[in-house]
Length: 284
Image (cartoon, rainbow, N blue to C red):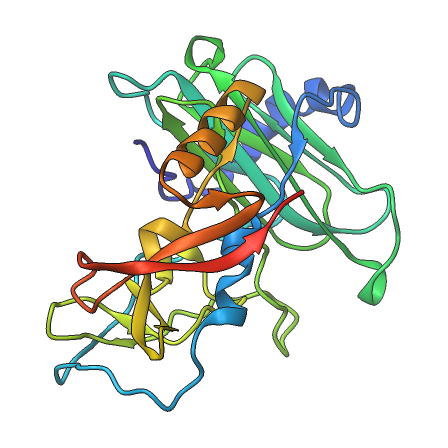
């Protein structure tokens, strides 16, 4: 999969955005092919279910941070997406942002608009509201190797754009809280490393992006230490009704969706030995 790469120079961004801006303004708020972004209840349930202290776990004398932190952008910008790899059939995009009433954001490739958002409300602290939009486009409909983000949003936003074999929605986590200086910054904790070389944490902070989550998230199972695995908690949102049905059936086949109750497997400290499953949420 192709990841978002380093931000180009400001002069290049300004020149390219200026070229596409006339095409963007006419379309912002018109097309609504995207869907609202919502994190599944499975992921939401993690922070409330992990054990809070009192249980020790084996760790060697070292710590390690997680992966690279997402880039938080402001104003208009350019996102490099590169070329799809063999087997990649869709470009999956999501944007999360805070905005005030009347502010807009739009994402384009070299020829046309791919998605847009329009802040119609004026509520929340300092008139700001949090929003997210996401969607997928077939690879053969994407022109060029970069996206232009044209934004008059007064605060920061985050863009995730990845190639993939399926039509799905990247789970762009909500932006981190705003610090004393008025800017949003991610938290990248250093985690203990256990005897199996895996990082271990006691929970997930709202300011910690998925890339910086620990390999194992501690909880309890039948009164003993157990762990959620990061890769299991970083799910995806289906991009089509067909994909949603496939995901639901897969969870049912694995015994993780039983009569509307959602479960998640827990493991031993090696991250491979499955101990059982615990209830993490439900759906109607």
